Length: 80
View 1 (cartoon, one colour):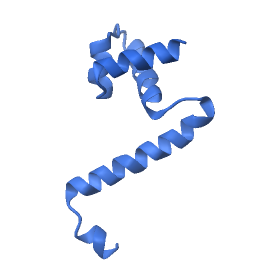
View 2 (tube, one colour):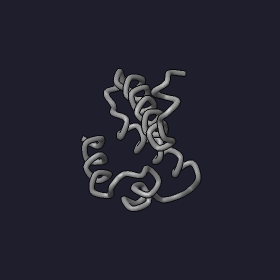
View 3 (cartoon, rainbow, N blue to C red):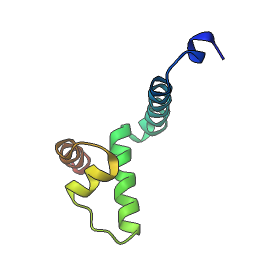
View 4 (spheres, rainbow, N blue to C red):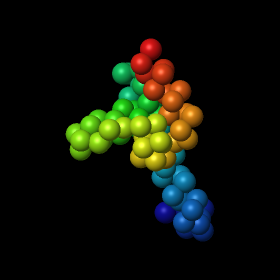
């Protein structure tokens, strides 16, 4: 491990890991014409429907960690 990583805070390391995850997901779903956020929304919709839940904008926002207004915009873009 580099000396910079050894002195990094837990918050910084979590942030770095989340950024690496997001880049990996973006690369994986790009050939499908999706973004990370669109994938997260669609995966959440799929999981909720398999569980018998009726998704709402609020439930999707809570499930994905995205803002409700952004969820609405994502859903409209995916629908188009």
